[in-house]
Length: 323
Image (cartoon, rainbow, N blue to C red; front, side, top):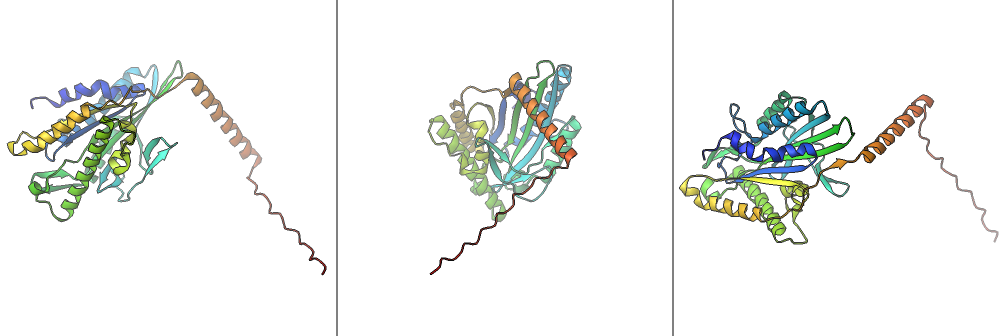
């Protein structure tokens, strides 16, 4: 209880900064409603949480390595509200779809990705996300988050000497809190939100159980949340979880459930994390392909090339047989 925001961040600092070395990293906060997850991940303006401190550290490393490495950081922020995905940066009320790339990577189609050059760009994106995020009040929490928030940082680096490139992905997730309807007295829209939150958290629990038992089939597609986290939880990524519990005696049962969930997560073996690195040979051949494509495009512009459509062949009329 006496730990500061800075101390909490330093516990996972090495994990999040490994994104710059080409690792995929996922960190999420789990716990009942009102237990302090949003405070841990976002924090107040004068005492920021993990999200802002992480980006500050990444920019600090970028500046320290700028003589040797080129680095590009892009940020996207979304929420999963009532099993629908919304872009919190643009604030558009249009549900986005999940897609798979090359039958492996899960991504959100149409999600805005912002190239961030400084912390001002990050703070602006976070401010918009906070403004657009779905929140509400109920008996147990006056400012309850009614959605799961996912902040994603994509880090592309290139060594100026060797030409080696890395691509790391960091997911920072503030899960909506689990709720007992009997305690929150939720009705109407709040009840619907609570049901969807609990259903998606239950699906996350099913995935963790399946991973722990090393089952052949992992039910990632049972919810938008677990489907989105498939690449992070399926292996080859680094994963950490904050478990937030309430100190109030009346919440002892929920706190016990949260700790039991954490214990199950701790027993999951995801395998060896893998760096996403493009070797010098791959970089070289990609450059050759890019150069050839540029030359072809240039030649086509000079010659006014237009793709011709094949002419349709006319069918010959067949003479009717003589009877």
